[in-house]
Length: 474
Image (cartoon, rainbow, N blue to C red; front, side, top):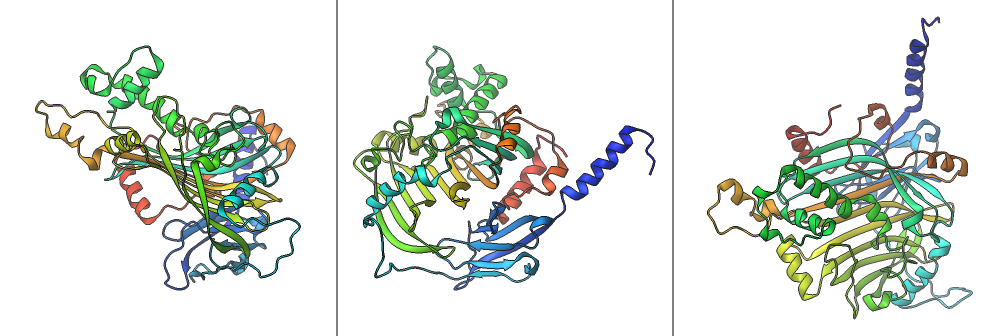
């Protein structure tokens, strides 16, 4: 074949590479409980001996993109407390539901061990924390993943961002503040319906960035321009919901356990107590299920410019029985001090301020983050209700269904890079963690990228949202 010019040749090459690079098999199905056929949410779905995988949504549904080179491999589906499903990928049947049956374990009557085994929840957790240096990555790596960031009030979605991200980490021993960084690689969706009306945010922004001390109740909306509010909201979005904060902050409890004043640091038993609940099974391995309860001191996050103190922790830890590696963390911070209880009720209409789920996957004898879910209420309240007569439109802003917002960030990691040369090459690129920056939509890229499947409710609400406003058009 003859080409008239190099441009024509380049187009043909791109078409060829596009056809070969994105060749893959799509697996879709639903995972349910054998006993009652209820959907199993957050089940791990992955290709054996790889990091390619996803998790089921709240409806038990999943979709997984399998590269051609893995078509002869084995698909594994597992969930804590259930049996494991395994099948050759070539024999996968999308038309038959996948059933998992409940499975618990009992401690062996006789266990040959080289050292005494802890028997209480506190002892097990303390030992698992001591083992973090052994179980978490001890050298640099990059993870590729998918981020879904959504914000809503009690009525509807107000904001949605979906991005492909990269996370570089030099390992557990190094400070995440200095040796962990994030890049937003691609953006798939970005819809924004939020009203530009957040006097609390504006007051916080001014108080943090100027010598002026303001209170939201003393600010008139008419005295603040839309551009001023936009600047303040962007600042607040970044400090509260920026990816850097999630990965480098105290809520990344295992990665940052060796930081000063860490939640799972030296004084962990002053702020948490742990009770052994039972022994479960995950992918044919035993693990401890441990309940988190409050202790003598309150938990605090020390967030600059935000009263993020006065909490009690609750939730569950799942720790492997054999090597004391953390498999899953379910962690909530609930308002406990009188000041925090009043603040949470008044500003957020909830007592649960932080809800976190992190699951880990084992790869080459180390535990890497696999799935992260983080939910927190959002400070968008317009402030004190004026005593003067106001219009119906303004009155709606004080409706509980409209005024109380919360954000959810979900991250699915589906690739781990350990090759030093590849890591060094990517390190040379410019890294930007701003999830709010607009980027062009790359249709070809998303054809082969593993994403989190929306729930049925999410699909409808996102559809409604996309019809009303969009910050990008493909």
